[in-house]
Image (tube, rainbow over all chains, first blue to last red; front, top):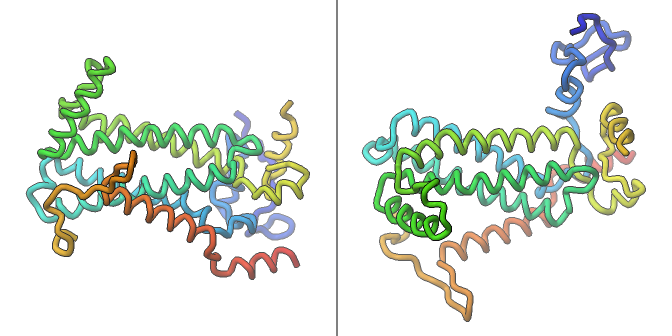
Length: 240
Length: 56
């Protein structure tokens, strides 16, 4: 590990000569620091991002955060609290509608990215991880329905049990076992989903938002964003 | 919502040849399509000003 200071490009709050620089800009050049500074919380975006279709992804992320927060409160109070108290009903409803919105916004995000071929310009990993996140979110929500502790959950569990038994998976996923489904729902699957979404967002920040087809044509067929930092641009160019 | 809409009954279904879907699901899908179209056609406030600023 080197402790020697490394020269950095002047940040937005710096003065000529480097006398004043905000503390957020004083990061070591190790392990992703340029990505964090230039890409993670960008102050400016290309003008083509000024479309509501680009908002679905971040709105889905916001809905996921609300679902996680309300789910944490529900799990903290135990798996019967939401049936017997008004506050429990409230947080149960918040959790349900946050998940409903998450799925609606995620599907709208998927439509927007599909019709704009958002995997262009070396963004295939972003697309694939997003698709896997969508697939992981399905059992995450389904196990939530099984964790309701009511007749609806029992009905869904027996229907799903028949389906899983018919494909030979009933021995591995016992959907009538509340403890197994509850631990899947509050720990294992949300953890996997959050990790996948975090990787998806970091890759989006790493590669930038995909430009429209017309702009890509004007850029000579390159779908790299105009605001790509020099280090990232060099990395793109160095690929075979 | 339950006080506004009577929800204590099985969902109604839309059935048209091979197509069969509950009314709540049809409403959700149509609402998503409308939202998607609105997101395409509605301008973002201030977008034109920012475009002019970036081109000058």
